[in-house]
Structure formats: C-alpha cells, structure tokens
Amino acid sequence: MDLEAIAQQLGAQLMAEGAMLATAESCTGGWVAQTVTALAGSSNWFDAGFVTYSNGAKERMLGVQAQTLIEYGAVSEAVVLQMAEGACINSSASYSVAISGVAGPGGGSDDKPVGTVWIAWMTPDKTSAEKFLFDGDRKSVRKQAVAEALQGLLKTN
Image (tube, rainbow, N blue to C red; front, side, top):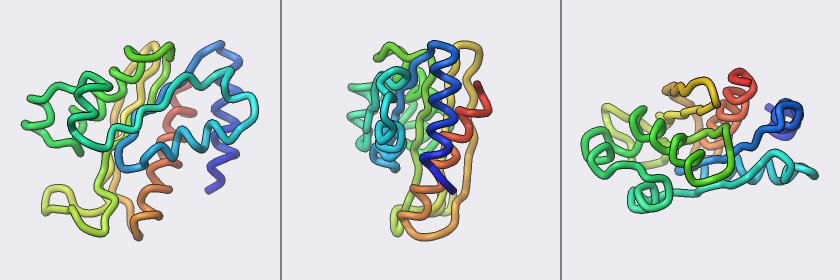
C-alpha cells in the first residue's frame, strides 16, 4: 500500500474542490497527518492535525463528551464520530478523518481485541464510520489504519 500515492490523489481532489482537511488521531499518533504533510504543497489542502491519545485530550481538544467515553470507550463509533466533528469545528477544514483503536500488542479485550480500529470520516455532506479488525503487529495495524483512513476520504470525495 503506497500511502504517498493515496495522499497525492486525495490532495488533488481536495485542491480541485478548494477544500481543507483536518485529522484527529489516537492510535496512529499523527501518521495520517505526517503522510499528508510529507507532500509538497499540502498546506493548500491540509489545515490541522490533532493527536489526542488520552481521553482527556480528546475532550479538551476535540470536544468529545466525557459521558460518551465512559459509556462506549475510546475505541468506539460514538467517539470517532465526535472526534471527526471536533476536528472540523476546531479547524478551518470541511473534511476530517478520525481514528481510535487498539494497536497492541496489549490493551485488547474480548469486545475490542488487538487490531480493532474505528475510523470516521466527515465531509460537508455526510459523516460515516466503520469498524476494522486488522492483523499483524503494532506497526502493521497502525499502517493499515492510515491506509484505510486515506482511502475512505478518497471514497467520500
């Protein structure tokens, strides 16, 4: 999976639309933002990246509700949807992607085994989220999440 090629396609689409992107990342630790900003000229279509690893950061920086975190946990559809919305609200972006997951090797549970990742996408027209279960070690899970996040943005645009 060529992350740079996916990011280049995405950038071309966002530029053509005159739109900006923001990211809200937990388990990927800014990898989506890094992939995007590795491209020359990405400042024309990338506004901000939020790395909100702790629940407190999700609340402070993105406006994720404490009750949502308590009720559903950080790795949930409800949380990534709020993260995606918060990324747009707290930036100049009209598109966002949010990621929260269990990259491993520990931290998994019966309900959320290692490799469980929720990704949400927000566009001017709709918001959606999808749950993934990736295989492999920590780096592999994180890389697959980055690829899905970028590909999901391509599909929404």
